[in-house]
Image (tube, rainbow, N blue to C red; front, side):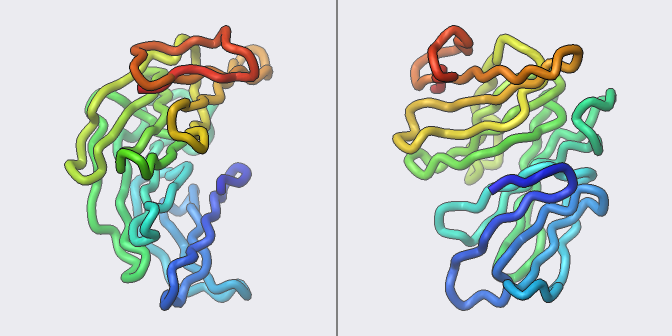
Length: 195
């Protein structure tokens, strides 16, 4: 679902839609809509330097992290919102504010609860979001720097966060298990905790 540097692409599988693909266009601060053969259908302006996106389970809405900084290793306060895009009508329909949690990056949807999880780079953390209420429910300490991507396991009980170390290009995994307030990097195979 997520691709390299300037793009993140998501297949739009809902029937009756002209667009087959939504592409997060980091530099232009938009989501572009395309057909399978590459025909550009239009774009929707979102926040500055969006990084990743996730489609709602019903495929009606696209949630886009408005990071605010072009490259992850650049310093700066960054943005603190998620843009909500109506896929069928190809228009921005809302924003979820993150308050003091800035530079949202990786994002995933929990169809079991209807909530979103997103990593933040400033401060480094994991945020649980109620998209219907458009508010942050809680934040989690990832016990490290620069959380990047986030992925819920298929049972939606664990959440894995990929972290970067700027001085050392090694990647580390951490996560959260339901019912826990913190991250445990010591679990094998990158399994961690999420609540």
